[in-house]
Every structure is written in structure tokens, then in C-alpha cells.
Image 1: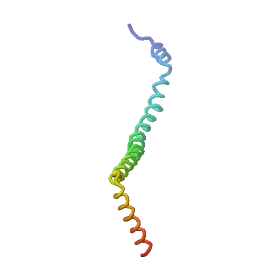
Image 2 (image 1 turned 180 degrees about the vertical axis):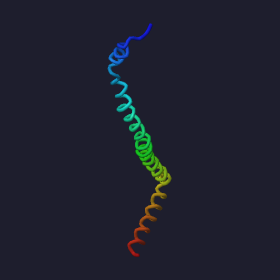
Image 3 (image 1 turned 135 degrees about the vertical axis):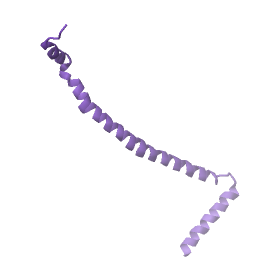
Image 4 (image 1 turned 90 degrees about the vertical axis):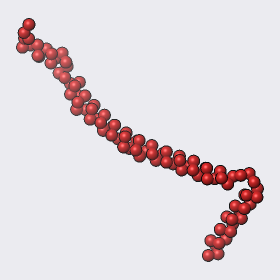
Length: 93
């Protein structure tokens, strides 16, 4: 069976002039690569890290503050006195 000259034309027309393949190659794939790059560098690299860092910072401040919340009134009075002395020293100097 030999192919007739019309077989290439009919194949071309059957495949919708290869518009889908061209669209995929020239539009979809480059946009996917750009969006994947932006997702990696900006979303994961910058935004996620900054949000995670702020969460860790808040957790660290909470942990540090919990060291001083003992429930003992004399401990609170001591830190109040130390803070008052620090303010007075700063006002005097």
C-alpha cells in the first residue's frame, strides 16, 4: 500500500493543523516553566520562609515570656522593682 498525495494533507487536516501542539509548545509550556520558577523562588523561597520565621519568632517570644510567669507574686514584685529601677536610671541619666 502506497500512500497517496492526499494522505499527508488529510493527516494534516485530521490533526486540526497541529494548532494544539503549537499552542502547547509556544504558550502552555513556557508559562508553566515561568510559573514553576516563580512558585519555587518567590512563594516557597520568600513568602513561606518569612511567614515561618515570623511564627518561630512569636513562639520564641512566648517561650521567653513563659519563663517569667511562675505564678509567684514575689517573682512578679521583683521584676516590677527591677523595671522601675531601670526606668528611674534612664530618667536620671
